[in-house]
Length: 433
Ligand SMILES: *Cc1c(COP(=O)(O)O)cnc(C)c1O
Image (cartoon, rainbow, N blue to C red):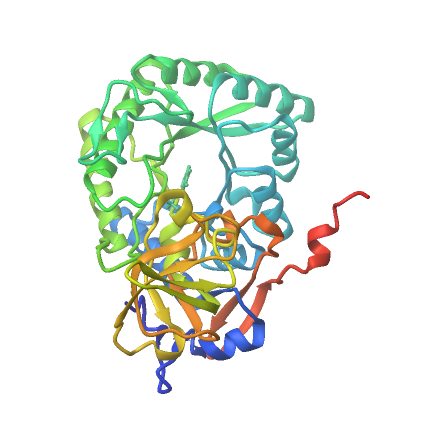
C-alpha cells in the first residue's frame, strides 16, 4: 500500500519517502526513526482548506488538532498552510507559543484545564477557549477579570451522537467526560450563564463525535443537532451563535481494509445540512470550524526500525523483533490498531511471509502487529510501518528508558530533523541523586 505519490518505491526497490531513500534515512539518522513526508502534510492541509472554500464560501477555518503530533516543525507547516490550531494542554499551548504560532488562531480545548493553564492561555492571548463545564466558565471569568481581559468562548456540547458504535446511534444521554449535555438542559444553562458572565464573550458551540470515522451520517447528524441548538439559543437567550465547531475524527487508511472518503466529501455533506437547517430555523450561517488531526498527519508518517532477531517458533509463529515498539507506537497494545508493514529494502516485492512484529520492551504484549504480511526479512533489514504520523510520536513513552526517536521531515529528496533523537543523558536529566 502506498499512500501517495511521494511515498513510493524507487529504482532500487527501496521504500522512498519525500524523494529520500528510506535506507539512506535510516543510515543517516539512525533507527527507530519517525519520517514525515512534508508534501503529504501540505496536500492534506490544502484539501481541507479548499473544501471550505469550495463548499462553504470560505466562511470557516480548519484547525490542526495538534495532539495527533505536536512538534514545532509541524505546527509551522500548519500555520503556513493557513490552518488554526487545536491544543488541549499547557504543553501543547506552550509548544505553539514557542513555534510562533499566531495565538488568535489557537483554540484551547480540554475537559480539565487547570487555573495555571487558563492563566497562561489568557497571557498568550489564545483566540478561543472551548469551555467544558460551569466550573471552568466561572474560573475563566474570574481569571480574565483579574487580568483585565475578555475570554472568547465556545462550549463543548454532547450532541448525543456516538460514532463509535457499530451503526452510529443517537442516545438520550451519552456517557462522556467531555462537555455538557443538551437533553438535560445543562448546555442551555451554561450558555445563559456565559451571555451575562463578566469578561466572557460567547462565540459559539463545539462538538467532537469520535475518531477514525468513515461514515458521513454521524457528522451530518451532529451538524443538524448543533444547528437545532443554535436556534434554541437564539430563542431562549436572544444570542446569535457565530461559530460552529464540528471537531475532527475523519478516518484514514491504515491497511487495505480501510476505505476513507475524500476529505471534501465531509465538508460538502455537512455544508448542505448547515444550509438547510439555517434556512429552516431562520438563523444566520455560522462560521464553521473543523479539527482534523489524524487525517492531516497520519498518512504522512512512516516509522523505520532495524530488525534485530528473527525467531521462528515452528508450528506457532515467527517473531521479528525491532529496535522500538510500544514506547514509540503504543497503538497496538492500546487498541490492537492495524498497520501495513514493509521490508523497506524490498518494498516493491511480494509479501510472501506472515510474521508477528515485536518490540523490545519487557511486555509480551509489546507488539506492532500480529500475523501481518511482509516481504522476507532478515536481521539488519530496515522494517517500515506505514501511516504512523498520528498518535505515535505524540503518544510515545520512555518505558524501559527507551529514548524517543528523532522525527525527520522529508521533501524533494532531502530530509531534516525537526525533533532530535533523545540521548541517555536526556533520560536522566531530571533524576535527582
Ligand atoms: C482528538 C480530537 C480531534 C482530532 O481527532 P482526529 O481523529 O485526530 O481527527 C479534534 N478535536 C477534538 C476536540 C479532539 O478531541
